[in-house]
Image (cartoon, rainbow, N blue to C red; front, side, top):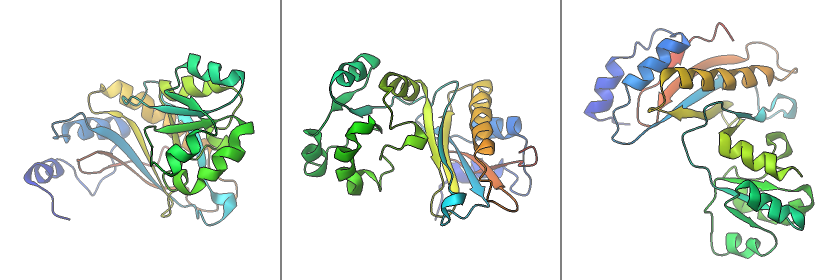
Length: 229
């Protein structure tokens, strides 16, 4: 993949042979952001897990203390008095059965997170082929299948992010924007790492965190020292 001059110049600031401590890595990532928009700061964690084994899967959620800097659109599947509760909590869209054809046939996907009450999972299950591949399927482990829709919506709007292994056993998550000051990015990063460390599968033998890389949307990766984790 060919990179432009801005990327090449930014990459020169990063020494790929060393692992930086978190504060240095965050400062460097901010310095290497050259895009004209407010880039997202992402963390990529390569694990020693084998996601093909259910007992080595990692999936969960954590509320970042300073949010993600992104406005998140929430869709809630609910019925009865839970509809009004979801609307009062600030959900962007609330509905039930009538949303199925809109999503399935019309390709409507104007939402970033889907929450469902347990009694709606039979309905939501029919959208598995659409929502599943996009990582939008509600899941109890991520707190998106719940009767407490107020807490679910509030947490998501406050900066709750989901983390899970991809096919290569890597976790990719946003921890804020380049415009955040370093202290806020540090707090978000620490909250994420605390959750990831706690999520270590008990069945895993050997090294858990193989590498941690911080990067902006368009910038080069900066390796973070894994020793403290």
